[in-house]
Length: 253
Image 1 (cartoon, rainbow, N blue to C red):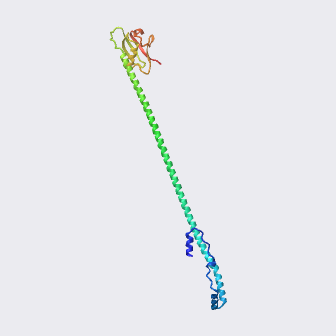
Image 2: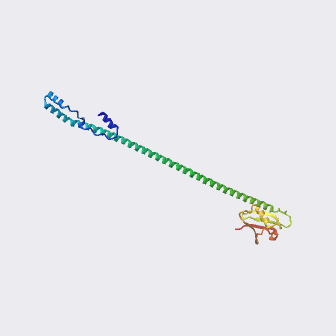
Image 3: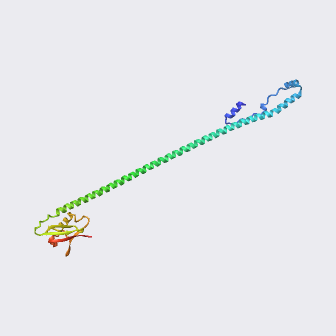
């Protein structure tokens, strides 16, 4: 019985059917031996009593055997169910671990893609910033070059005007014209010229001395009678200016 129990517990194959009661029934004695025993024990009444005992014990023995087999079968089934439960739990654990690993890999991949995207955005922003700085630098350099060009042009123009301004004649020089000029801001200029000098030379003198600016346009006028002096190639004599003359600078709007 012990060997049959351990075989049923260690294997998952179906247990063999329980042995029949007749197979486990102890062998009966031969008839001569029975007759001998009956003679010894006192006759046929004792033989009948023994057979009845055997008939009574057979169902009990069979029941015990069946109960033992059923218990072994239940134990094997319980062990099998435990094995199946352990296998199912192991499969579930492995599946959960696989799912967690997959989720971790996906999260790491997403973080990697996000990091790559952020790097690309930073590179693009840095590139855009460099292009803007380069454009601003070029614009600034162009402005500086233009300002320098204008400054040089003004200096050259001023130098040319200075060279064009004639020397002031002496107080007793013949044909001199003494001009008194009042600017719009109230400043006054007094300068001697010759009647052969041009109005352009008078304008150049006023420009060199700072009475004229490069951003505004002025003209010389006389008030009594009013006359405008615009032709810069005209001489003072041709313009009717002689002796002492009072003129004004008038802003042209």
